[in-house]
Amino acid sequence: MFVRYTKLAFRDVLDGLSNTIAMGEIITDIGDADVRSVQADKGGAPSEANVRDNPSWCTDNGLKDPARPQFWDSSATLDTVTRSYSGRGFLWAGSTQMYSGFTTILPPNREICVNAFYINDGICPPSSRHQGGVHVLMGDGAVKFVTDSIEAGDSHQGAVFDSGTPFKGTGVRAPGSPSPYGLWGALGTRANKEIISEDF
Image (cartoon, rainbow, N blue to C red; front, side, top):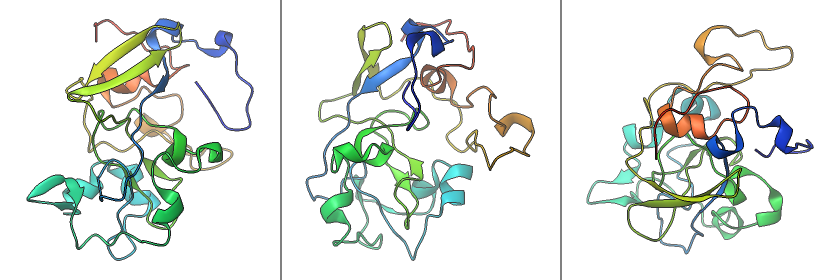
């Protein structure tokens, strides 16, 4: 519902205010290598293309600690210099998803997986410190609790994206295509005219 440098109004929410998430919870990084609060870096990876083409890249490539899957593995270098300002909840006025936004691609409380060199590119699910899910604010003002198990499609499916102006891509990933991330993805789009037929 929010686009940087763009003025939007309720009339622009074509999917319906009750079917579109406006805001939600994110945790703030506290320096414990929580997979939901700070980016990981494994030899300069992931890249923008890695996470765009496979939102589960960070899990699939062993960046999580196998004994404590809510935390990054020690082999996933966490840059202590950039961590002083690049954790979730930091630089809130920076307006990027890493700092103060989120995506409806991976389900709530899954890991963030962002470009190791440019933290604005990537997957940033909402997160909370209470069990089982997150609270979101819908466009119509309703507050709802979304569980971590919400139907979220295929987390290995590449994201819908615009590769430039004019966009030359076609097929299921072209702008305007339905979200491949199920009910969860549909709740995060505002103008795809996706029909929400189930309760959550």
